[in-house]
Length: 187
Image (cartoon, rainbow, N blue to C red; front, side, top):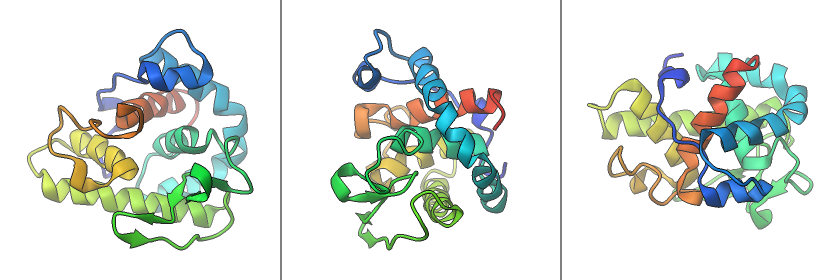
């Protein structure tokens, strides 16, 4: 893919705080993979839409699946398509207001239109990180873009602390570990 190879991105996986969402007694890559596996049955019904949007946007479908898994547990954590106390919409949880931008919802919560909107936001952030850190490798820029999808690019100051203020302080590490699992499992 044009934004880097997700299989070459380093990832430490889920933090202890994040893994406790599922009452796992462990953290790291193993916890991320277990949580991805738990979502995989629900994820399969979106696979053709994920593959289509990935192809259109130049983003690895495994990464889209991983963000869906992280953000909405493949739709399982949503109430009529809404999550985050009614502040975010759809499988990939597009915030109504983020980074000084008001986002209108596009399509149904589980539609290809929604996935294309959210993936477009991800691509926007990857490009912002590419411009902000031109000396980073493509894979580092990809990981930085994943972190900014969660918290905005103004909060990324170094690669070593890319997740310093993301949700659970592990967002990109957790998503990348899940993406690698989805990549190995048909995405």
